[in-house]
Length: 463
Image (cartoon, rainbow, N blue to C red; front, side, top):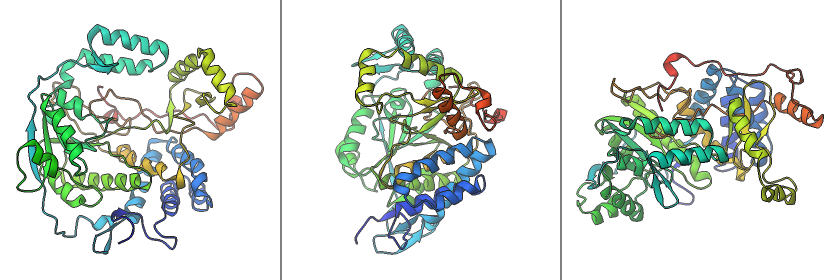
């Protein structure tokens, strides 16, 4: 059979087109909140390069109110689920929504548990230049990073808060599900080092599992991995047979996770190149829906990306501006030599407390047919997930509500608000820069937006 199988893009007259899917999903997500934007997305003739404006409009519309953000997320995911399909090896095709209702011949997964023999760490430490910083060394490094503009003050404050509360690292009452367990940026090594339980899901590739088993043996935690029945207990046998493919064995992974004891933190750290990334992200969301339907103790976590646009507070803007103004002669020269294409200011001037910081290399990066931009589907679930307490009453509760979603169950929280910039405010900023004066409220043709305070029940209570 030619082409991919498992979770696939819908078949159209143009084949399994990512452009057709992107237009349709963005239009459906916008329709209730921004009908004009929805029609504009539907009629975009050059989606490969023109999708950037529609994704800006997508997140811009979500800043109007909490209800708008939730509506966009819910309608966008519903559209994606309706349209994506599952193509089996025998050539039969079913809708994504039917994947859990049809029987398969694949045997169920069993659980193998590996316990580490290392010491459990009860103090936060960060790797830096070949060693781990902790205590006063880490505090001094945080101060240096803030001074140099490497991190924002709020990031350093969050790390200090975790340092001051080492009991937050005790995760023995939770099961941290790491989808994409072998990811370099995932929390698996840290959770194991703190003595936690990690439920690992990754592809059945022996090189991945050998590395994970080696990490586990040196830690004080426990690793739970999916294996076929009859797998031996030694590391060689486990590495050879462990793993599960989310694209092709979604029902088996779901059934396996439904049988895991303890509260689940479902962490999404999967990544793949090109269009496969969208397929995997969709499979993860289908798995998320299935688990939330069957369990009432599932919290969500994910890793954010720098290739995005974030609305931030005025303090963050001022911190970035100070760093930009203090750049050295080498960076200034590089900007001049590149004709202004490199190291440009990462924001447009806006009025009010909210400004747009454009992420890595000009926010969204133009990629073939806009496939990577559909990664927003990986963030939408966190926009309307119900808050779930993950801590005993003696500890402050964590929340996966929309204000804000947690990037990782173990990371300090980042107020990662839905991201965009307002086109009218950006225009005002350009006019002000042209006139060589600060932007004024009168320059903005519409009211400046500021986020409404979230309901008290949705506010995260601790890092």
